[in-house]
Amino acid sequence: MPVVHFGHVLLDETLRVRKSYDYIEHPTISTVYTAFFIFSSYFCLNKENAAWTYLRQAMTIAHIIGLHDEDHYKTGDMIEATRKRCMFWVLSITER
Image (cartoon, rainbow, N blue to C red):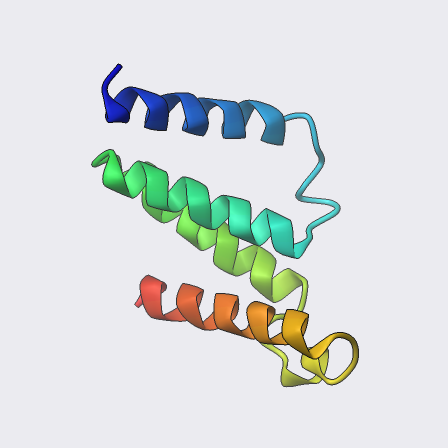
């Protein structure tokens, strides 16, 4: 089986599983990671309209959960805070 086929299978499975969870009403950092993964997958498949939609979704959810606000990082695990901060900056740079 070609590698591209496995990519399609993984993307399809991600989208299928995602439909079983109300990620809009209950967003998490995993929701952001998943939207970014879907963006990357569609971008590599030359489906740019779908890709940019998922990148925008990832950035919107990042804002909803407060990744743009430095106060968000003042409490909790510093390693997790660093990961979240890096994700926010990856999204910001990619979107530009």
